[in-house]
Image 1 (spheres, helix red, strand yellow):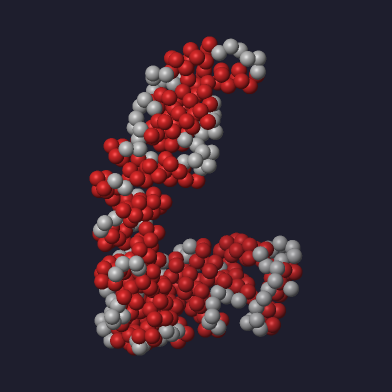
Image 2: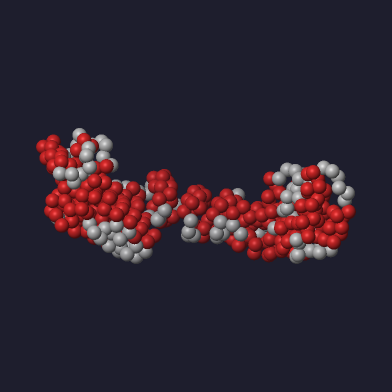
Length: 450
């Protein structure tokens, strides 16, 4: 703490100005500096609202080089006090050298942030820092950092490396496998300017890596480079990604490739054994409106992978009602919800027997969300019919069913139901009127139904 004593004495020796705010800032700085006990406190003081405290911190940190110190100094390069900016600038210059590469890479976010700060011209500092990071001797260090960074830092380092790369193929291979999707997209764009014989193997390799948002860009860039696109398009038509399949279906006719024939050929092979193959096959069959036979549907609906079962539900045609109803018992909520969505298209007469049986049997074991979803498959008046039937069928559980009936009635304000016959509606209203007259339902319950 070389400057602490000096600054405390300097502040104490300042004469009282008579200006309230200036004297208050001086006392505030004295208190802040007096509480400083170590390196961590200096880092904290570098962001203090008091300029005296920040200046003292910058002077002290200038004598204690470290990656963390560089971050703090870069922040102060944009300080609103010109004297502090100048002190920070002089201190940062010492780090703009190859021997401080570790500190520069550590402080990369703060360094990049300077480009958007405008209290001073930070262009020269950024230019020197970029030049240092592009020194050939430091390439390995920068590549190691590039491989582990994500977001803006990864894109920044890729651009730096690309500008001075003497082996673009090696760099692009690394970038095409990067965990940051935007870096991979940048690499695909860079591959387009390479000779075809260099770009083709890179893109083929990248197409096999996960990440649909990148793979569709890869496929788009790859197709013009292939002498025969049909093998790649056949695989893409059965890809697990909808976007890949969409691009392949668009490109297939231009290559005299029939998507329907590709699907039929796959259906003559054994059932898939993994999720990706199932998703591609089910997705293409749904997009081409091809109805799968019983063995394929049964295998998909009995798969141990919930996403496969979910993808199978839209493939169920209306004559596969039994499979749609079976999906209502699926353990996965998404499969259940998709089955409910598709069953809304079915006539009530077709669903009534199964829904009545399912609700009667499973009422007490179904989660509330599933009970509610199954009730909403019923037309409005049929919901009322169900409550009244359960109420009359189980006198010993009257309070339970009355509670549900009261809650249901309190939520009704417009009974839209084109299915239930007017005669049945009248009978239901009369039953509600009887319960209301007996004091079992709140006054006005019947009016909600009219």
